[in-house]
Image 1 (cartoon, helix red, strand yellow):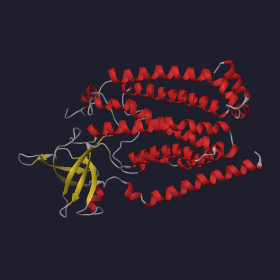
Image 2 (cartoon, each protein chain N blue to C red; image 1 turned 120 degrees about the horizontal axis):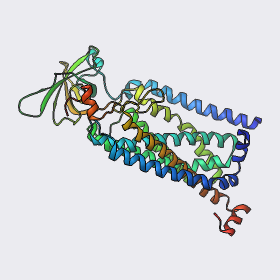
Image 3 (cartoon, each protein chain N blue to C red; image 1 turned 135 degrees about the horizontal axis):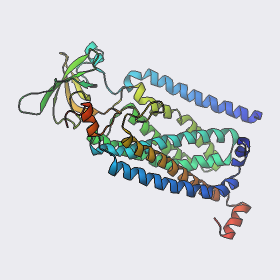
Image 4 (cartoon, rainbow over the protein chains, first blue to last red; image 1 turned 90 degrees about the horizontal axis):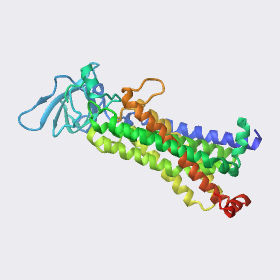
Length: 144
Length: 249
């Protein structure tokens, strides 16, 4: 390779590496802020701010969904299946994919008593897809 | 032909123009067959998902378009390096010719993602790491498009675009690994090179067909646009005039 091209190549490599390092450092510095939601262990341990609008996520614990009265209010527990869980209260229409065992994202405030009052509930879908017949065979198709 | 010879030949737009006519036809026809097969198969014959029902079928458009949008950007990054170091004319043309296709595919991936997100997640748009980095990709494509129009001197415009394309490549691993590095609402990758897909073959085969189809479509589109770029930029040269005079384009 002739010297002129080698110098240009070195300059391009510096440009690319410099940009990558800059972006990398920014992302590492912002790491916590890029996460879309707080997982259950951070809610339970108190790492999540209280009485501020935040997002929290987790799996709906089996058997924890209760309807309160005649209205649209429901209570359920979000867990990480690793020892941390917190109760959520929500008034409104739940997404189609909401069911026990499903990953869920809630937007709202964490109260001082550890109960999360949600204004919005989003369903998190995982990367697994299967036909209904297969789901029944596996016993995972509860709900629909 | 050795690799080195091919490298030197690529320096000649005329040679590329001569060989690419048939290549474009083959790629275009393959793309048509694959995309029609994959789409009909995916929409009419693949089984519905046990949770999402039929709305999961949007995956057959969403995943291929998102894949090719990122691959197209990687190609532009490589072309940018070649242009900056070797000053190859064809590299600049690749940089210019990829932008419209990549931009449309990114927009399509974002649109289909939103249309799927509404029934599945319960929201059209969520500012998580995956969706946001994909939006950044769309802005990068738009910036590359605008930058070329904004600089009147073609050579300067080409180099400016090459620098932006090379720097922007950093966004591609961020898109790819965003779902692993951070907590996002978007699910992890459906297709992985290292593991079997998390769905049965009758669901992922049409997806694979469509993915291959969209890559052929990209190839055909790129070659077609490159041929136009070559004619336009080389319009003053003897060989283009001869072809024009002979009526054989």
